[in-house]
Structure formats: structure tokens, C-alpha cells
Length: 58
Image (cartoon, rainbow, N blue to C red; front, side, top):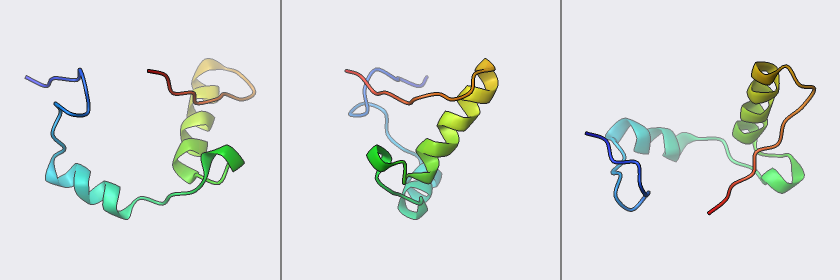
């Protein structure tokens, strides 16, 4: 079973850790994070909207 309650409970697999170590990063506030930009583009396309915004919450 996969427990998705918290990032303190879910343990990343070796593949997940490898992906994190090699991920491109950037400042998402200035639209410089390629992963966030791609996620927003994909969400806009899926929803049929011109654009989308990734917002995290607690």
C-alpha cells in the first residue's frame, strides 16, 4: 500500500531520488522553473484554458 498522507511518511524510491538529483530547477516566482512551467502548460491544455497557475497549499 502507498501512504500519501505526508512526505514524511512516503519514502521515495531509488528512481525518484535519482530524478530529483538530476531535475532542472529554477525560480518559479519568475517563471524560470522548467518543470513548473511544463506542468502549468499541461494543465492549461487539459482544461482547455489559455493558461494555468500552480499554487501549493497546506
